Image 1 (cartoon, helix red, strand yellow):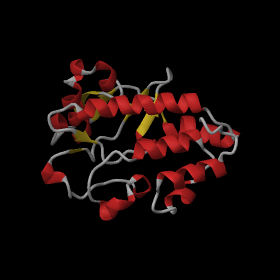
Image 2 (tube, helix red, strand yellow):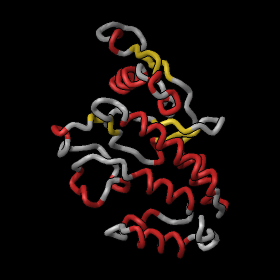
Image 3 (cartoon, one colour):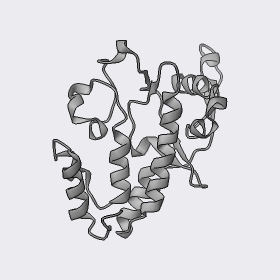
Length: 196
């Protein structure tokens, strides 16, 4: 109910950035609050948004030991379009649990972000608020679940261009510097050219 209400409020502003807003999985109606204390079914009416990035792209290429760099770039671009829309609000919106299972791909190849319950406003009062993020996708400098950022897009992109790179390898390689990530990708996905 909370997620649906948040998404309805966010998508009201889609005219300001139709492309970015289209990257958010829409909820059209919630029928939970109006069914309280009565014997009616509770339900949400939501957009059919697709399959998780993990299932449709990362695991697909992991199982086939293949890569799709142009596809990964397009998906990362679409995610960033959605986050650009979220940053366009007077007080920007931060997803706070961005990970491959909270990004889905439609049958047409369009990226949609789901699971908006942990969203917070990027206001000074929320700078050190506890978050409900998944540790794998939380920046190392924000241990103890504090602070907000969209660091996870880079990690998801890395997983998409190099699906054979196991998260145990990159998660435990701290600090995650650019050169360390580059070396991890090069050593794990030798088939990628240096330009990729």
